[in-house]
Image (tube, rainbow, N blue to C red; front, side, top):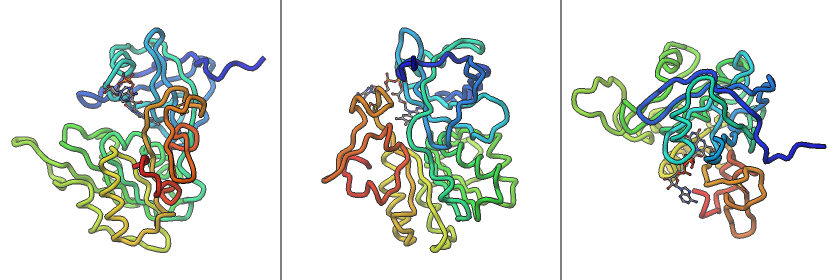
Length: 280
Ligand SMILES: Cc1cc2nc3c(=O)[nH]c(=O)nc-3n(C[C@H](O)[C@H](O)[C@H](O)COP(=O)(O)OP(=O)(O)OC[C@H]3O[C@@H](n4cnc5c(N)ncnc54)[C@H](O)[C@@H]3O)c2cc1C
Ligand code: FES
């Protein structure tokens, strides 16, 4: 008999790495020893027995060595706060991977412009590291990453490695830098980085993930650069329950179509959701 899709797989927390005051990186392995088998951009439902479930993006690339995968979790509520109190070796439940991933095959041979705001770097990192591990399969790779303040930057050590590579371009910015904090990068919202970048209009895809407020302004800047809607890929966040297209919690409606973000997304082509007022 097939196992019900609502039953989580047992999993073990192998490693816990605090990243900022609110975000922690969890390295997780399924107890059955299988790899997760995900695509960059997909998510899992993480469960803590007796507390509940939360959808969390898979932050590691499928090209990573070993069977484990990584989740970057911000402590905001019931499940995520309890997760932050767990220890290495503790057990959690995992359902998934769910949702559409980034269209990595469609983007092969293309220039890819990654634009990450805040925690949006978590799902994008999966695709970025995929592209870096398979560097010759993609043309120019540019990464723009912005946070509110320097202390909120995630994956700092790894990003130091990105900065040293001469086969990608990496630019970062913070909205503001408190007095006394050392910061040599740009100050300003992420859209301030876009006018200065060179874009090959025939070949560039933009891949965006960030807080809802960011999309409107980033899309306006990309429009000024004349990037067609069809070559803008974005990942949406909605409140979810089942993660499987059954409960309707994550539904977004357009004038003549509807999508379940958990199943039809979270990754969408902008051209497909442009008319959906609820989407952005
Ligand atoms: C596809 C996807 C990927 C995600 N990836 C990540 C990730 O990589 N890392 C990460 O940290 N988070 C991620 N999230 C966000 C995460 O799932 C939410 O923050 C989730 O609510 C946390 O669960 P919780 O039980 O800890 O918080 P909750 O107890 O659910 O509370 C979280 C916040 O949401 C509010 N809230 C709860 N339910 C509702 C509701 N029905 N309507 C309005 N407000 C509500 C609460 O008041 C609180 O402010 C992702 C979400 C989606 C959909
Ligand atoms: S979360 Fe249930 S339909 Fe999307």
